[in-house]
View 1 (cartoon, rainbow, N blue to C red):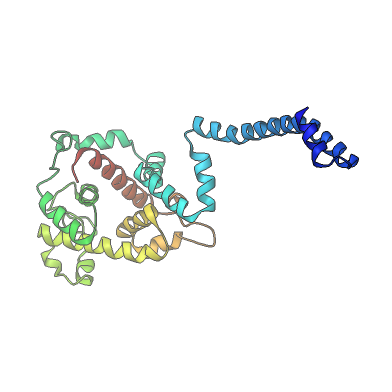
View 2 (view 1 turned 180 degrees about the vertical axis):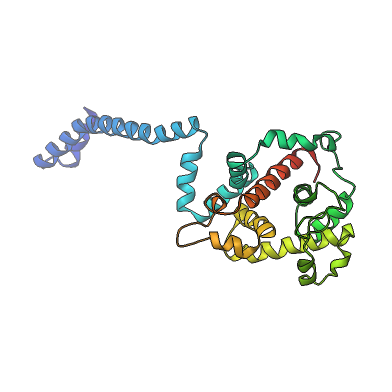
Length: 270
């Protein structure tokens, strides 16, 4: 009632203004209730996806935001890598042409205790060369295990020599005397250098885990052979798409190294 008196005092002779003001005062509570109701409903709609996101681990909404924001996408990628979500490792477990668990147990006795610092008699050299060429020493150790099972005297039927089964022509190409491949340090050095070369060459075509997978496949089968199966035209640019087109030996080679590397990371200190 006080509001009506104030309005009359403001405009005592303007009947139309008084009527409009009175109508607005009467309708205002109704409009306010409707607005609050719709706002609450909208908020519920916004919260529903967030609730679903929380129930599902929060990946859906994060991915949507990341796809719109390059910075968020980079953060998401780093988060995935940090969590160990390695697509090539997943492919190795999924498509391994052998029993992964049984095979991984084959050298469990080499790991004396959890987080041991030793895996072979060549650890010191492996660490030195891996550090020199920018690799995790446990990856090189896994590769050596697959190549020769840490046997320096190993020699293949095609002439590959030593711990990393280096071909004499490869050593010569890399600037080393092939006759010195029986020296463990020379052998590991040539192998790591060749790994680095393959990794660098694949830098223009592949990224992240795929790049390393293609590098290891090239070490085994040759870069030209891997490139024959790699095709941007057919979207064959990931290990998941390319590996079925490679020789079975090469698929086994890469998958075993990835699985063994993962095994060593869980049992060996960096």
